[in-house]
Length: 228
Ligand SMILES: [Zn+2]
View 1 (cartoon, rainbow, N blue to C red):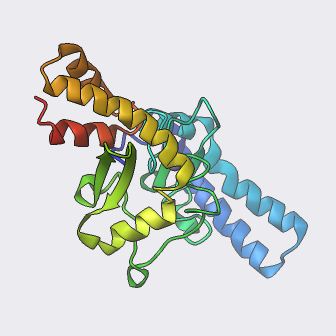
View 2 (view 1 turned 90 degrees about the horizontal axis):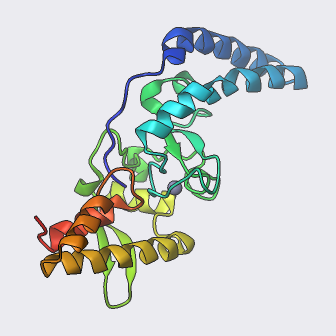
C-alpha cells in the first residue's frame, strides 16, 4: 500500500452528483416503505450511477491501474471495482462522494475481505486510508531474504494497522506468493545497486514508481540498502 494523491473530481460527478444523490434518497425511502421487486430495481439503478465510465477511468488514472490496498495490477486479470471506502450500504450519502471512491481489486473488495465492512474505532478501526494517510506510518513492507517472502507487518502493534491487514487480507497466501516472486527480483536488483551496479540501481528505482506493483516494497528496499 502506498500513499496516493487524489486527482480532480471527474466532470460527470461535478454535474450529476447532487441529482444522483437526491434520486437515491427518494429510491431508498420508497424501498423502505415498500420492499417490492420494482422498488428494489429502482434502488439498484440509482445506486449503480457511480459505475460511470468517466469515474472508473479517473480512478484508474489516479491509482495507476492498481488496487489501492494490495497494490496488484488490475486490468490484465479483471475489471476491478470502484470501491467505496465508506461502504455505500452503510453510508448511502457518500455513494457518489469523490473523496470516498477508490480503485480496488475484486479480492480485496470481495465479501471474504473488505466487502461492506467498516470497522469503527471501538472495533480497532477505521481502516488505513491510503489517500488520506501515509501507509508507511502504519506498516513495514518487509522482505525476508532467507525464505524469500514479502509480508505487510503492522508497525508497533498499531491496532488500526492490525485490523487493516486482517480485514483486507494483505498477507493472504495467493497474494504473498505472487508478491514475494516480484519482490525477490526487486531485492536482487537492490543488492546489485548496493554493490554499485548501475543497471541494478536503475531497475530498483523504476520499481519505486507509483505505476509498479508493490512499489511500497521497492521503496522499503531502497531505504534498507541506502540506495541513493
Ligand atoms: Zn487488492
